Image 1 (spheres, rainbow, N blue to C red):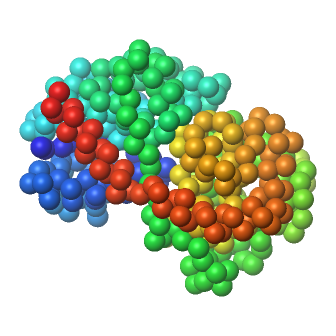
Image 2: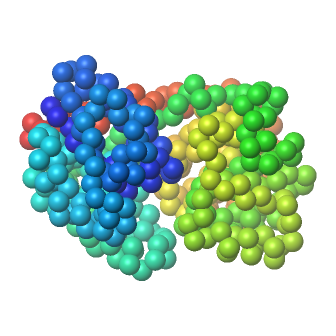
Length: 380
């Protein structure tokens, strides 16, 4: 089997979907080589360059630089993504970010991986043009995929509702247990992460998510932090790139006179993220509708308490080890923050059981599931 993989729409490794691609890409390559099969990856020159270190042994196809534009890229893949795969002599096309980039009437069988369909639940999650594209074009095009893969049962439920009962497989995300592991407060990786982000010695809560409003729910979290005992001597550290919501969040922090108790860290390089997670007193993930919630699983792998939304996939990701809250209810978030920080029994349980819980999900299993889905698409 020759597998073509589309790199467009994956944020060049600098987002949750980007982490997904960086983790599965080398594992897919190794599995294919072991079977005598092959991999070809295609994207713009910038896309290919972003994953070049993971493409040893794989063929590469560079697309025109004009396709760095999201709109042009989306249209190109809808019309020609399957044709690129066919011309590369691929037997199957894997779309690892199919909630962003996918094909219509592909020339080869397609496997579409969907990470979330939050736009079906969250009003104004994106600008009107993007909302329309996701609601009408993406959901329609997904029906033409030969195999559909969801990263969680919650996402499968959303996806099943828009593809007229077409079967959807669940292949969960994994976690790198060696990198996201428990660390002592004076561990060199923790100290390096604190230095790199400017946190110094301050105790902190971490929310690692792009600054998107309202979908990622930073404003309610900031309000709950201000109203809770969590703010006593602690910092709320917001790690993530601005996706149009940063000024809204900054304005709310100023209104509440939080000063430097809310820190905007910007995008944190992957090398420092494990230390930043392991050094946190608690990790928050309170988006309105998460399709998986990888930072929460990474936190449990590191033995850190998690404050998570009771909506979407997060309850299945953390099980009974999380402090859950209705993300629309600030008082509920206050209670969850205080439970994660002050409930000694919960903190002991997470430290003892969190790494083992996370170990049940691995990127190796994710890659195996994707290969199975591709095999099934080819057989069909």
